[in-house]
Length: 341
Image 1 (cartoon, rainbow, N blue to C red):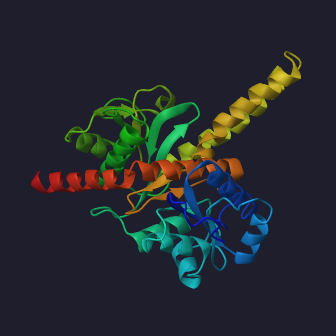
Image 2: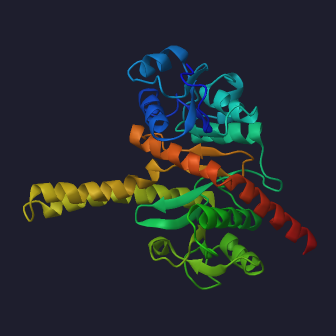
Image 3: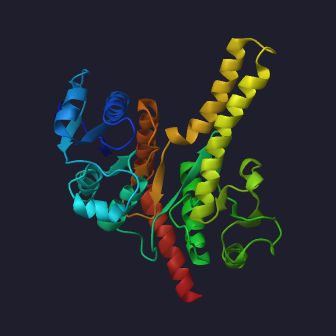
């Protein structure tokens, strides 16, 4: 349904079938986003299910369309094979809208692998990149710290980590408004000789470039403000991300147990809720898929409507800032520098 075709704004292709609570929470989030932003939401998914959900709200003044698709890609398995078997899945149709110029950005809480595969195959990568990267700021206790990569480039080479550093640098500078971001390699020690072969080689490579490289940092430095962009391979980054999530949950339970009887129950509840919210913060903002030719924003699968609304807000800002164009220009300059070196 297109309830107000006169309105303009950023066109968001929302994979309405992606996520643990789709389509109920995705539709609710779409309505909230359309109420508070000048956006045109394109809900991609099962037509009947989406219209049933939309019927719960007053959307007469909103610009929300339903774009039919067939099925969705579940987590697990081989995403490329799944997409070939079901080319009309919601994430495929949503990505195609951007490819064909009918939307400005893809937003999905669905399978990360399928979203990456769709984006890579349909939208293409920046020249010189072999695969996209997943990254972004940790929010919560480290709101200005960007970690690259968080799960895409598992077996990375030094040149791939340098590309991640450049992408993270642009994100830190423009999205987080940090001038001349400090870039570091995540290792097991701050000294130049510490680490495995990848970190040692990356240290030497980073040192030879004009980026603001501040050397190695350790895992604890995620929270010590020693660097603005911390670079690691996707295996380490994904473990780090999930460890901090688990630590937040464990810490909230620990505080609740140890403080029981010492302070009022309502204060315990407030304190543990704050800890949980810090742990959940990254779920509410989503992050761009770095290195893809058009904006693609990935949110956490367990996000509720509030979380999905936050991911949509991230999408709006990424488009407004023309972040992808800036990243593409930075990678192009890196490639040119390497050719002349």
